[in-house]
Amino acid sequence: MKNTALITGASEGLGKSFAIEMAKKGIDLVLVALPESGLPHLANYLRQNFDCQVFCIEIDLTLPHSAAAVFDRLDVHQLSVNILINNAGLGNWSWFEEKSIDFYRAQIDLNITNTVMLTRLFLHHINKHLPNYILNVGSLGGHFIVPKKQVYGATKSFVGYFTRCLQMELIGTNVHVSLLSPGGINTKPELLVMNNNLKGFAKATILEADVVAREAIEGLFKMRKEIIPGFANRLLLIIDKLIPAFLKELIIRRNLRAVLSV
Image (cartoon, rainbow, N blue to C red):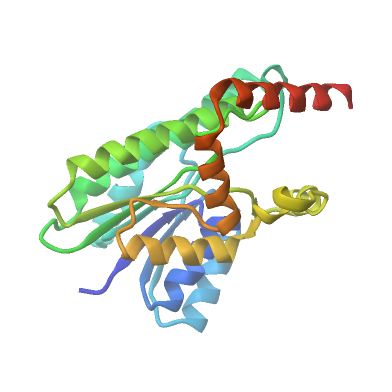
């Protein structure tokens, strides 16, 4: 049986890099993204340049029952997937009161609810006698307290906890679950500009989307529990575990004062 991967948020950024890296391996694709986000153009590129089949689903995953609609489409077209990459997510860099309640509702629905629903439907969909893989995209920020990323970081902490529980529940089965915890990624022009202003160790934690996707897919097929791309990011997590909680809080408060004074 040929592998087929379902990738959400596939039209740009990390999701697009996932699609390209999977296509390079000859893996068939089901790509999910918002309508009018360039998905058909990406699909045509992949079909023309790689040995893979590509099926597109354009849908807003923040809408109720959207996860079920994705798998209904697979059933209608008699498509089976054995790899799920829960990549779609909504981020922000803002003070809590700067965003509306509608924004936070959409962020929670996309980052949390959608991930849970798609995973549950995937487990019902697959043939458990064959190898299956789930990659949940968390964030290194889910390990830290990061002001201006309060709800986003909390959603990624949820993804981490959810993934670790699944890993324990599915021990001894043919379903292999990995958590991707990347640091900063150059996925959009505005992020590229902001990240280029970083210096020293902070700049070393920023990676390109294709590098993250390549490491993630390699780690997924090697059945690693958590994948943290980049040496600097792995080192940062080790340092965090060594620093006492009170000292970390002092550092965060000092950095917060610096931001407020700008």
